[in-house]
Image (cartoon, rainbow, N blue to C red; front, top):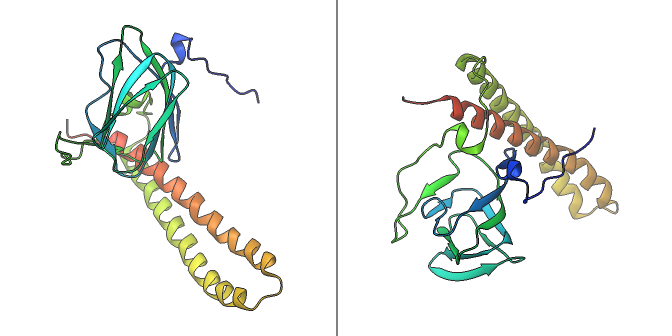
Length: 208
């Protein structure tokens, strides 16, 4: 199956390009004088910014730096940050947040205090919510994801307890490691499904 090549010079590609629990990836264009969102942090995610065009001023945890074309910076989990355009040239940047688990953004005051939780709608991430899926089906999927994670975690606890003891005096630790990896893999796959079902459920819930 052919893959898609994205180009920051193509206006149709100025959007969120990949949305998974592991990563949200997008190309963003900011006009002169424009700020990016409000000052915020990410409860779980690290955010990477790569400037493709123009010059931007980043504030991350009170440290202010100018980042130019071809340069990169990042804000790790819980680091409050904001960005604005410097000069008369629009800024185009690639950014990614890993992981992408809603609510993703926590607003921050100028003093760094966390603001109330705010769940952004699916449209803010260029996600089209399938309205034909009922809430009960979404709840059922999420329950199944929880059960799968519980099961995978139980297997890991059971098998690794023995494997860790075996590793202490083993002459073939590589074989033990391969068996341990099978359980670690199942846990992370289950976490991914839990994140996906949680995001889908969260998008569908609104008080309005």
